[in-house]
Length: 232
Ligand code: NDP
Image (cartoon, rainbow, N blue to C red):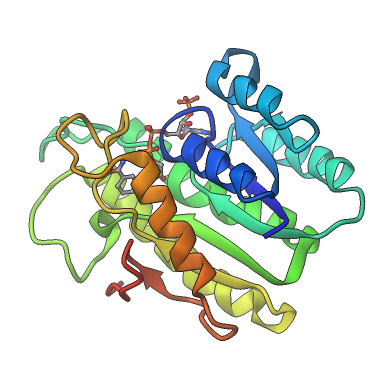
């Protein structure tokens, strides 16, 4: 994977994906909502001169997605994008039935589902034949696995994202682009919290290994950190 794009790369899993892709020798475009405040990401740029470009992206905002598409084309300068990691995501904690806020459902849908879907659409012409789109999903978005009322805004957003993943895999199949949903496990980040068993470095390494093992026809799948196929 020579040219990669990682969204939400200023902290958590996105920062770790960026670090590991750079260590593998890739050229990475990493996005942050506020690049000027992305200290860890900017420090990485110093470690890998010329191979890490940090660009602004609020995935929930149409104008920001459009600007990223234009900037990315300039950075790639005719080289195709081998990997698009739709990593940015949001979770509203503490929701209870009867008090779920419309604004939280809306923000989750925009950030977790609508933004990634439209970003893929906007960047489709830059993706390589044989390239991969990986959408960071969650078991919490699986209709088949849901047993309890928990984090509904996030669950609805990731379930909608999952449908987007399936539809995009069909749309991009003729171009040889594979689209998959990935569940990273429960990971110790701001979102996952301190009790999560997996470290970001472990989870990112496991998911990159899953992508390494994807076959040419492995598109439209929902995969866990061990590569097992999860039910939608
Ligand atoms: P974090 O909360 O640690 O980081 C989230 C990242 O997403 C931040 O970089 C944040 O940027 C960015 N982000 C949030 N909203 C937007 C937006 N509108 N536009 C652009 N970027 C945005 O989460 P994790 O690293 O834990 O999660 C990464 C992905 O993995 C997410 O999609 C999440 O749903 C998924 N996941 C995580 C699990 C876990 O246990 N941690 C489990 C299952 C799935 P900013 O700093 O500006 O807020």
